[in-house]
Structure formats: structure tokens, C-alpha cells
Length: 179
View 1 (cartoon, rainbow, N blue to C red):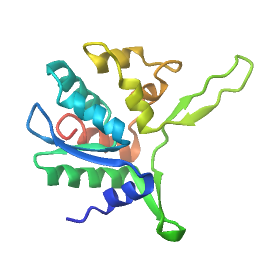
View 2: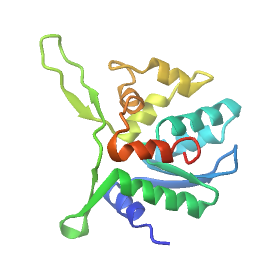
View 3: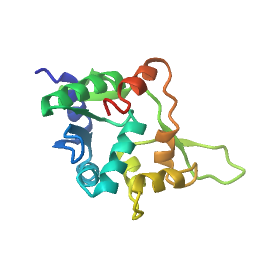
């Protein structure tokens, strides 16, 4: 199995690849992110009824997140490989380095004074996972309701991402059936 996009993404981002079976549904989940983010998401997926369901809702609602599922570990990896090929293009740099260039723009507002021009920053996946963390019983629902341009901004940016053009089919393909 050739996983060129997965390998390129891992090389470019120096992140962690995790694959585990989900507690509910018996599907496998593949996630690429910082190790603490992967651990948190798998802890939620393997948690109690509420945690597992909330984590699955997060993935179903936000197909832009670098995760995929499949009925086998191999299928989850193949789906993730396909998805990363949609989300990024990869360029070779000097010294055998690879750069992952997003095919999307995911930005959040910066804090600024009322007289200053509004500035933005690129959102990273780990900030989104940080925004998900909540002690509420329904952690994703709580985080989603609490997200705004001023609080949990990274999650807010992801939740409000506009799935247009080539990403329109991403939302359809990676929705509930393929999350």
C-alpha cells in the first residue's frame, strides 16, 4: 500500500500518526496531529458513552480535520492518505525536506484594540484540540457552543469553515459515513 501523502505529511509536520479501533461502531480511526492531541482524541473515542459519541460528532461535523476512518486499519490509512492529498500539496525542499502547503485557508481573529486593524493568524490542529478540552459531560457540544471570534477561536474557525469548490465534496464524502 502506497501512502505517499501520509508519509509526506508526517515528514513535513513532524506529527504523530495514531490508529485505533473506535469503541462504538467497530471502525478504525487514523489521526495525524501532535501526540498529545492524538492521545486526547483517542481517549475521548474510547471513553464512556458521552465522550465517544461527542468525539465522533466532532469528526463528523469537521471533515477538514486530518483524520479518517475505515472498517480496517488499512482502509483508515488509505482514506487518510486520500484526504491528505485533497487538503495539501507537497513540495520538496533542499536537504530532502518536504513542505505541506494547505489547499485551504483556516484563520482566526487575533486580539486587537478597537482602533487597530483586525489581524488574523493561521489555525493549527493542536489549537483546535486544545479548544475542545472541556470538563462538561458533552465536551464537544459545550466547546462548540462556547466558541466565538473571541473564545475558542481555533475551533470556531473550523466549525465555520466554508466547504466550497473542491472541499464541497470533502464535506459530503467525509461526513457521517466516512468520518
